[in-house]
Length: 216
Image 1 (cartoon, rainbow, N blue to C red):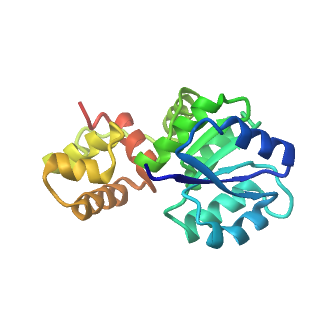
Image 2 (image 1 turned 90 degrees about the vertical axis):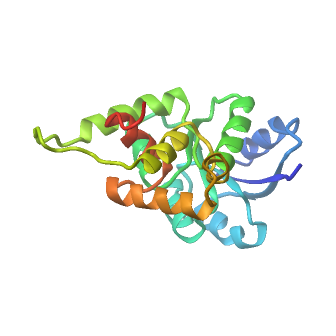
């Protein structure tokens, strides 16, 4: 079994050590790096090459928001899971818009952290009920609705099938196998849909599809 390499960034050493200790029973996860702030985290990424980063929000020198923006720009394959005490809806929506793959509170049970790590590696995102509720509310509240009887969102059958499987949390490789097409074709369809819908990632695709009832 291939190990998932995980990094943790938090300015409290005791908390970092506690998380690492609490995850020791999950043998397919390996913590490869600790960082005490956003600058420290960014400096250590090239050498440690983590697959997933558990990142606090409030840190000195560079906070988790700026660090997440920089990571998603410079290291797009790395998934960032925010692990924080902040329950404010504004933080959740903003961080997901910035490219975070998940948002967990520090009170989260280790089993859910483990689940989130695997989900973001396999599907690109992890949406628990806490985040789902906030993002659905956010998407509806910011929607600017101009009434029109002729406006229709058109997707092809192939696009609809890819969109449905994305919403079911299948990876690009799994979708390719199910549809008997290449992974590159799947990614091209996803990119086309994201551009058309004006969203940035798979999370945006899921909520756009839900909001506009594009899947059955």
